[in-house]
Length: 89
View 1: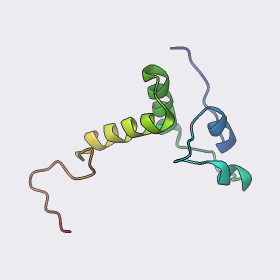
View 2: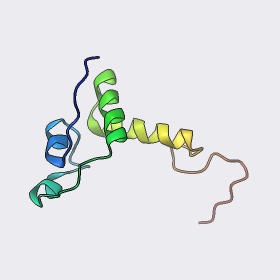
View 3: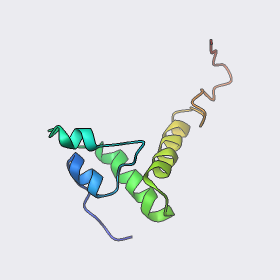
View 4: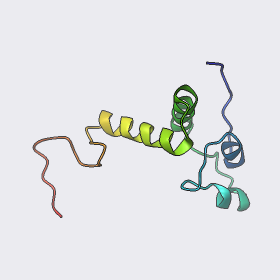
């Protein structure tokens, strides 16, 4: 895969395809949000997933989050994988 410099603001994130109707950056852009945009590490990982697997931003985000969950001992459904965990509803 070829190296691509990732954007450093919300407008650049949107132009790079790091947005969707479910994850809309338009308000940030219209408000001239001065923050640096999306988290650099997550953005890089999601971008790589998009390019390598040929998936949409939303699908890449889901894959990324499930990977983070797995590393943290959380199932894809958001519940702890620890058999000793007690949950109340």
